[in-house]
Length: 103
Ligand code: FES
Image 1: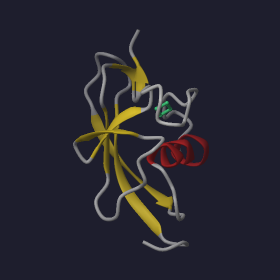
Image 2 (image 1 turned 30 degrees about the vertical axis):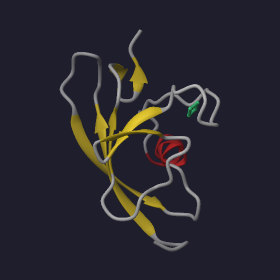
Image 3 (image 1 turned 60 degrees about the vertical axis):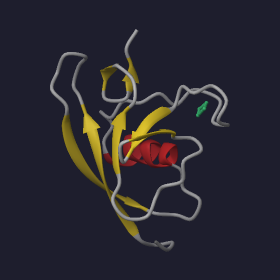
Image 4 (image 1 turned 120 degrees about the horizontal axis):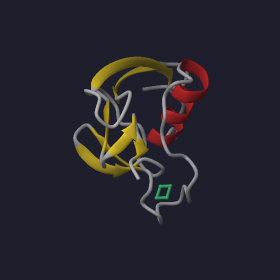
């Protein structure tokens, strides 16, 4: 991937804790050094204001609150660079909505 390119990612969406998970595809502009957390922030800010995820933590790989599944593997989204090729994001923990943690 190069700067100026777009990437396509499949993102798990869930309207509530008991709702069925569906996958939505977003097209996001790629930039060098972009993390998965950056990508999620872009989706929430620029593409879909209904997308819920937790973004109020250390962003340094210490707290673990940003854990998500990236292509099926648990990853700290604040440290995980956006991989080349296929990208599929799912919550790693139980959620109340999308990627927002359940109580
Ligand atoms: S935000 Fe704390 S580990 Fe990622």
